[in-house]
Image (cartoon, rainbow over all chains, first blue to last red; front, side, top):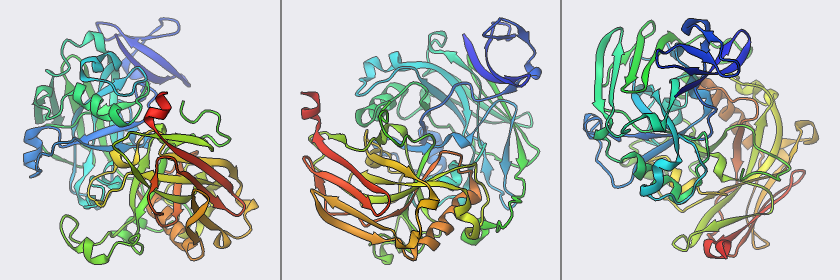
Amino acid sequence: MKRSRVAYRGAVRTVIADENEHLLLSADGQCVGFDEVVWLAPVETGTIFALGLNYADHASELSFKATSKPLFFLKGPNTLVGNNGESPCPDDVRQMHAECELAVVIGRQGRRIPQSQAYDFVAGYTIANDYAIREYLENYYRPNLRVKNRDFCTPIGPWMVDASDISDPMALGLRTFVNGERVQEGNTREMITAIPALIEYLSDFMTLFPGDLILTGTPQGMAYVKPGDEVVTEIDQIGRLVNRVIREPRITVEGAAPSEASFA
Amino acid sequence: MPNSGSCFEVRGTVYGVALDVDDFCGNPAELFREPPYYRPPTAPVLFIKPRNTFLANGGKVFLPSALRELEASAVLAMTFGRDTRGVSSTKAFETVAGYTLAIDLSEPNPSYFRPPVREKCRDGFLPIGPSIVAPGAILNLEDLAIRLEVDGREAASLRVGDGVGRIARLIEHVTGFMTLRTGDVLLAFRTPVGPSAKTGSRISAVANGLGRLECSLQSEEEGAA
């Protein structure tokens, strides 16, 4: 089953997409059009974990030395934006790039989950595009929040596919297209640390809760994007996630200074 | 949920600051001119404390036997009353809804290079509370003194004083690239890290007007018993 959350006629609703990708409102089965809804993040999220450098080829692209433990960082819910959403690119930025990632949705609370049981704790999978802005990288808690915790710079969706409907989450092709041109291609089997090991690693020192998300990293293919670009990230058996890059609106709050510049 | 029963329940995301441009938390500046840093921080160094770390006043933190010592600092935490983006330092305090205390617990970690998820995000590693105090109830933020106690003895203490300006610049910096949402928490001002706390220790954060927040460290074996 494919499930998501949308805004429809002034209310937040849950929807199910059938095999022909017709959308049905969960409460009453009413069929609604793809373009009649505003897509939201497909699940109500808790903690958002993301991985840096979890594909060997992408790690070498960034001349990263593979380490024994996974490089995790955390993200706030301010970063999420649903399918057909917009991600802002600041005026002075030339190095914003897309990152197609398989996102794992945790379905059960767990602590000290062994790899052998890890999949029992997964509710489903969705697609995330974990944009990064390389100009803002610093060597402190890298990748730092100014790179990875920006408002609406993590498109996610369009829906969560139930875990039981994915034959093997470690053998899914991933692709990114910018304005129709393929810029990134890989397969989840190329992950350095596989999903069961990621769940074991995290739950060894912290409790995972339903709604927690793990963005499992991105393969090779770093293409810069700019305002106006349409970016499509797709993953086999899940679907395609559409996003548009826009120019970041000027902040107009009274008394506001152009604060990023003062710290650059 | 881990924070049930608390008088103050976190409803958003908790953001902390580990280093600032003018406060290296006791580290020598030379350290940050060497690899892997190459140059000192040019912006506050931020981190996130996720929901599994939230702990109510009086709670217990369970440590595995391999982890014998923790670092703790007492923190002035502030919550936001509306979504805040692009606010200048001169108006930074206008969207603050209230203040409370927190204890930022961490495994000792000399490196600032990678995000400290394992070190700072164990269950219970952010005691927070005991209650939320409205800004109007604090006559002068500068006069607030935050104190860290370990087993009843003062381990570190710091008056906010000039820190008010730093907090204002921190809010300007953070909201310059992201929204601090209604209910989000900023760990805005902290004491130096105290001497290591061990299993069996009682840790408190105290401030005039904000009350006392306490937690105790126990071994996981005790918790399982």
